[in-house]
Length: 481
Image (tube, rainbow, N blue to C red):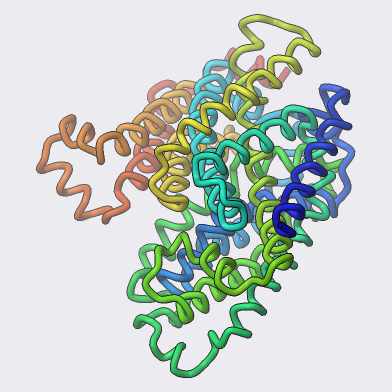
């Protein structure tokens, strides 16, 4: 009963914050009026990063793989360092609303629309993963069943985002990140107090669980190639990361916030993996993504369980809200508004309608999720394969000689390859290129070929098509104006 009151009170408070912010300006809804200082932006970056992938995913990886599970978000924290040093100020200086706006400025509307469609599709999958994680956590304290828990989480997350937008997300992330950190420490204390550090328990862990930076299940290929390219790239050029930076009051705040966030992400990543590893020591033989909920059910006393749950739900909610509003803003401003020309207030209403529509779509996708990490990998593969490289190249477009034609076909072919690679287990790609060529790709790129191949296709297309159809002189003159 106490846990129910704690969780219900948290949901009611969050909905109240969103309701109070519902009459804000369009700028406050899309970019928090660009008035956020360094600490709120930094805290929001951390809260956005530690969503489903950390609360359920990394703890599950720590359970199944050991300390190397930390690399899932650790590689993101490391990616935030070059982002803060070289890109954050550039992004904020542009004064845009979305990542596709950057593509529009660099290559034109056709590229930005293609990129916006790819991002919206990919980010619906990420929102769905957050909803599933939230439902799993909520189910651990309330006897609702997974389907009803998923419905409750979806309604609360969507309503909060619908009413408050970016301004309320930035405001609540500042304290939710501390609530999240406190919840993790409390969970760690519970696990250690239950005897997880006992010598016999640690010695019974599977071989390689204490290995770092690599282990039998996580080799140098994953560490140096797959994780940096597929998992780390969205931290360098991701619409949710950019949406935080675009809320900053200045270029300096954007740069500093990114670097401070990196300093927080790195130790928290290790803490999450350690927590998963210790839960394995106590409860061997359970499903990895059920590690946290099992530990809470078995170890947390009444009341404490509710506090830990709202801390974890806060991180998931921060990530879900940011990705949902990012996808909705991108779809409204970059795809639909140029067609209908609705005006500022009309664009705001359209964004809110899309928050509900995409939230409902994500809810439907969530019913078919096979796992948090696997679902996020699919979304990352689609985004990285289609949008990441053209966006990154846009900051040095003239030096690299990237043309609008090259960027457009990189988005289309890279994103399409990622989607086809995931449909029916990659059988569509196999039927297109033949079994022999498909087998060669599997042997060359490894089991993660479905995520790496789109990136290779995107890179080759970006530069080869740019050489075939370079920037025309009249285009360059128009850009200079």
